[in-house]
Figure 1 (tube, rainbow over the protein chains, first blue to last red):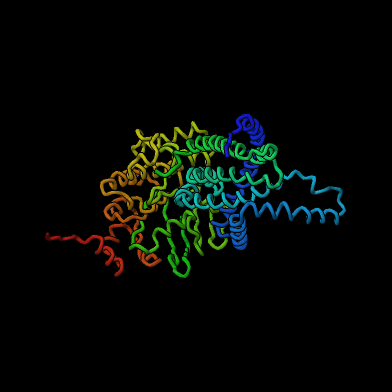
Figure 2: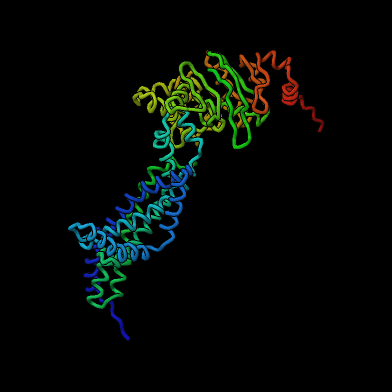
Length: 235
Length: 249
């Protein structure tokens, strides 16, 4: 059986896939904006062992980290809308849950997942800052909030930066499953193109290259941020 | 500064079992005693780095009641005192100058320029005029501790708390730090110092406090306490510290 790589098709699929980049990045950005601060708060509560809340958060984190995204998509996207639709109808509201852009589900699902992942990174990063740094800050007269903001946070960020970077990159790659919700991200667009021409190999090579490039660029962005924090790193 | 019936326990272990102490203004008070006697804990309670269980800390118009501590009082107490740590605890990623400036800018709301001038003054004071732009990791232990002292001095606190300031230093660096502390003591700064450097304590302290097992056993001017200790425990401790080792190799 002879096989010929269809370059013209690959070029078209490539152009298609590029159109999916903003969608992919918007999911990553939304998840980052929600998960990064949320992860910090979760880590703080767990480190302080705030009673009850700390235990609830522990369960939340192991649930969010311990279930595949695909399963969460199934739960949130396939099971939740009918239930919500029913609830809306019972309440007599003039609004259909099916009008909602499915990308909202992607934001929520990846927001939850990343908040749990980031919280674990925050936890180890905050733990990695010597307690003497906080003590020195409050003894100088800073309020606990100032001590955190001025002294502890920059150091924790410096410690956590490589892990934040790699977990964000793996989240970016992980967003490829949103095509299951008919969202046209990089993977979704390329698969659609492939399905129309029955040229899956070309499409997957294209996807491969596009993700590689996008991840490479994001990695460089993180590197630049990391360089600004390097002086806070332990000797 | 007055400490009244201060108690602190970690779990079931009582570390401070009722401390009453007055730290007179403009004087150097030294706390000595065997390790585990609660000296460092006492000092850390005074900056509220450890939470005392009961008792009161009075500093001019600040009254911190350990049983009902108000955030306002804790902050006021911390802002009227300054701590010099055993492990220096300089802010990582900040130069010597920035370390001294931090409190001035954040707490005293000075401009960067004003704070910079003051920071330079105090770094010169501790003999580090040429190291202002060095990061902590580029400084020796002795130099780091001198930055720590400059950071404390710059805040012009009512009381300076020094928690074993030379214990983490190599022997050849202890001298330079003690000289700096001694100089400040002679200028009439109020200090409370925990130290194992008995010769130094004897020289600079106005009052020496001997602590053992969470209690103050006795206190007095160094001359009296070192030469005529009343308590048996004090005598044992001093004998151990001052024993002249006689080695035959």
